Picture (tube, rainbow, N blue to C red):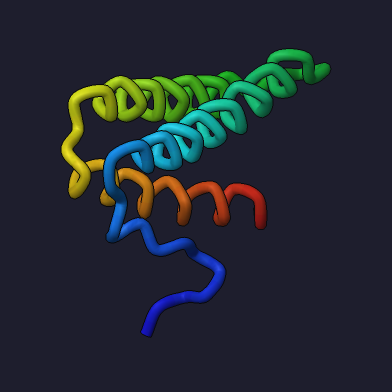
Length: 91
């Protein structure tokens, strides 16, 4: 059974790869925002900063991969990032 709160990207075609790129960008932006906040903290947590940097880099790498992804690959990336964005926004 599918989760009604998670979009189904299994049918991505043509320009719909943009939706996947938007999701990846939103996740990378979330990490960047958290990273900036942690760096401004009175006592920054260096381990958290490193985790956030690595997660943001991974998102940026996936975003770059979308440039050459076929619709099936884009759908997979979109599904992963839709779930991740939902998880991040709930935490």
